[in-house]
Image 1 (cartoon, rainbow, N blue to C red):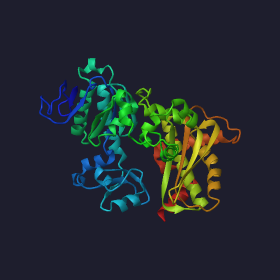
Image 2: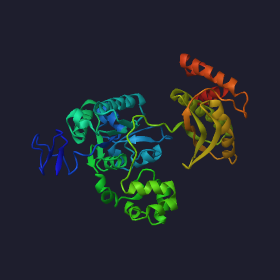
Image 3: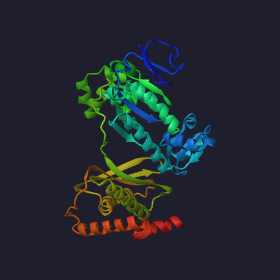
Image 4: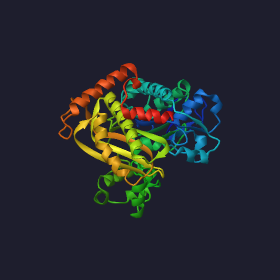
Length: 424
């Protein structure tokens, strides 16, 4: 049996109750500790942790990072979670559950700086770093023993202490032989945790967990699985792979593989961007088609701006709406050529919006996104809109003016109406 001391990073054989090198008692025991090399790094309550770091008065208070009463919770600290607050929860529900919470507006600049600092520390260990969001990522430390003279587990223990010392937040680490199991392990011992799942033990460890523990199994799919008799991961493990594929298609294949701890995905340096989008939550529910149309133009412009910055264009344009009862609906259109232009997004989503506003439904959120992304090239000729080339040139000229003189340098009539509405 091997043990790892999280306080001094020593990795040795034995069954010590305390570390023989430093006397620390934060020990991890596992027979294959030196052999496992794929890890998932997850920052604990990242945004809230940064806010507490920068304001010590918040240390022992429940903290929620998010928007106004009409917004949602971006994240919250573990104290707030004890009262039932969760990420993506509507703010009014969060404050009802935890009325004493301190609400802090998000500060993207601070969070990005901390994320970059963490990534830099990961890249000091290995070039195989795959950040999947601002506060979590994977590393593959295979072959680094020869370079650093330490096993991956030892390096990860040192990483956790360095991040806590230098950046002022804590992380949880999951160590395994593949990405899926590393992610599952990091969820097992939060916050400030370090857990290990050996692929050989995966079936036994995963078995008692609900199927919803597997990433990609949402509430709707979980309900369907429960009706079919698959409530626990062990239920899926007992099923035949072919029958799962026959019943659920690709989702059944994914579910069966993950239930057995199988994941062939590699840690890749560059994560492929799947979509670009923007959305807005309103201060008050809006039923007016005219006002919603103006808001639609605003999110089309923002989505287009983000797409241009990333140098990407999408074949699929999607309209997203959320009702006052928090029911979400999406409507999509597939184009003959990919776009990154606000005018094209607006042209194809406006009819979708008009259809959804025929009954006078009030909405609290509107969004637009593009997917099925490709590298942006020259503007394509659009047979449905022959004048698109001229309008595209005009839009790009507006982009240049805004980059140079600010967003208010050039405004459309719709944007000006929105400004007037906000001032009122």
